[in-house]
Amino acid sequence: MIDFVDTFCPECDTNVRAILREQPAALRVRGEEVDFTETVAICPNCGAEIGDSRIEGENLDRASAAYRARHGIPSPEEIRRLRDFYGLSLREFSRFLGFGEQTVYRYEHGDIPDLAHSLILEQAQTSEGAQRLLAKNRERLSKRSIESIELALSTPTKELAWMRPLPSRLEGQAEDAPSTKNGYRAFDPDRAMALTYLLAQRCKDLFWTKSQKALFFADMFACACRGRSLTGLRYAHATYGPVANGREGLRYLLAEDGIVEFRERNWGEVLVPGKQLANDPFSEAEHALIDGIADFVNSFDTAREISDFSHELVCWQDTMDGQVIDYAEAAEEVARAMEARMPELGSLVTR
Ligand SMILES: [Zn+2]
Image (cartoon, rainbow, N blue to C red; front, side, top):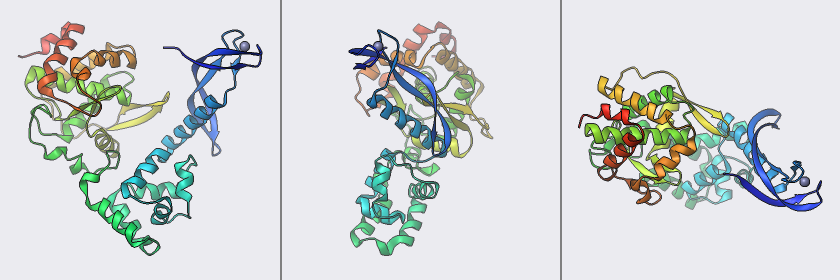
């Protein structure tokens, strides 16, 4: 798809519909060279690059996001969500963290937190860290704020998806009984991690969003042809295709245990296999199936193609954003669509 922007070309001295192009770029952020993908507007008449404040603002945001990702610094949006989680005003959240008055305001509006503040923000993302911050800065906080923080920390349902969950609390999935929602298997973190590792090893350019689709196809196909999902993950409808419920928790486990490394590339993150799990949870037949799924994922040339494929599925079309895609309704359809695209997959079916 080609994107355009209506702007003014100073070379041609006229209004033009400029073509937007993406290209690799480097910029210094805080004295450090950061690689990112920039958008440039090209004049369709003379081919000149047109400076446009809207595009430049976006490019600066991207460069700073790349810098943040490199150093694990939370984004303005993440900081806002963290504050929402604790139900605090800007000033009270600053006090809770031990920052100067209104510092959080600057961070929520794009200023990049320094390293010391980043570490404190990271602390505030775990319940243990938050308890320590509360103990340390309690005197500076109003009674109401203290209650609000304590309430947030004691109410598991208030847990945000992106908050770093403990392994046992992967969005409560570990407690799930086998059902049509998890493909007749209680969620198994070891299997989810081992499957992600194998897919990262075998699929080319496994970006994070693509990995979600790969897991979805693997679990649905396994459910259709072996009667159970491989991991017990639940999947939900998202704008760009199916995603695993609890993916942020899974991501945390993968990174924490070094199973998969998340490497920034072209304005996205590629999964690179790290160290293998000590125990292989999969049978030989399951390994054959996972190899077949990897071939299937590799049969798509671009992330766009695999997205388009998932958007053709009735189980995706008939669900709304955030709605769980039920294995009982989806698995057969998904497996049939996969076999239609790749008949070799049929040999893995033991129906
Ligand atoms: Zn021009």
